[in-house]
Image (cartoon, rainbow, N blue to C red):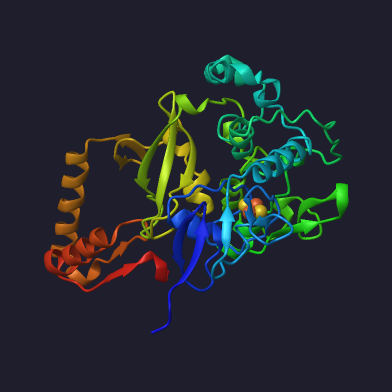
Amino acid sequence: MEKEKTIVINGSEFVFSDGETILEVAKRNGIDIPTLCYLKGASPTGSCRICVVEVEGARNLVASCAAPAAPNMVVRTESPRVVKARRMNLELLLSSGHHNCLAQDLDMDSWSDFQLQAMEPEEHRELCPAYGDCRLQELAIEYQVKGNLFPPAETHYPIENVNPFFVRDFSRCILCGRCVQACNEIQVNNAISHGYRGSESKIVAKGDLALKDSDCVFCGQCVQACPVGALYPRDQVPDFFSPIEVKKVRTTCSYCGVGCQLYLHVADNRVVRVTGVEDVGPNYGRLCVKGRFAYDFLEHPDRLKTPLIRENDTFREATWDEALDLVARRLNEIKEESGPDSIGVFTSARLTNEENYLAQKMTRAAIGTNNVDHCARL
Ligand code: FES
């Protein structure tokens, strides 16, 4: 029998299987290695170098998200050299654009004061829209990095807010590439890629067009993957809420029968954002444009809240009992007059399988016809 392959991380020995990265072995065994550009389910790019670790015998630090574990490898995840490198990488990322984040004003001797200040709603209105929900900010606080070691880089690209769903603010983009991975490898839409070079680098769509003129289908997976404030939902703009004001409520998307799992982000008794639930089926974090962005109907003044009955070409509001009685009576009358095959029933992809089953059962057993079909075949 082949001997199990092992790796040593922070002095403890762990078994690994072929193809596993150092990061995966560490995570599986409860060892936290910070990541920023790493996106579960996509191939690693190794671009942010926050996940670097020290490997005995290697001259340079190694990006653990991209380095496969090897037999007898000896790894240190929090050595002084590693921490120093992470801090420098964070300094560089924070100075790479416009990150107006309280982390930069932070007096490191009063960490808890900063936390308390950051939780005050009036303190963050003028800040980055990802404030309080930003992986870069989290890491800056964890590693006590202010981002003021280097002058901030200027960005030449204007904010793109010409589509109805989300905003692209290139000045906050750290070019981690997670949006590109989410688009190309998670959703397989292939709408965006890395463009230009050096300080001009930018995430582009189809030769640098606005997203609305590109192949983008606005699923918003890139927005969910963005670890900073470079991509954010438009609806979020007028009211920013701090993380403690937002409650996440898990539910099932009602737009079709797939049953995608999503989180409603609720603040002030309103839904302010929707994200996919990672790590559970059937969607594993993926959502379509409707599931992610089309929730404004919830509070729309035109939303139907009661059944309507048509009388003389106008509609009047009715109770459910009244509406159901009317439908039952008319179906019976039509069946009496013209026979059951004069009635046909269309069900909907928006219903659950169980509801579709019941609709065909009622059509066949109660009405007495096989004239039943589904909107997917129209
Ligand atoms: Fe590994 Fe970015 S998380 S390089």
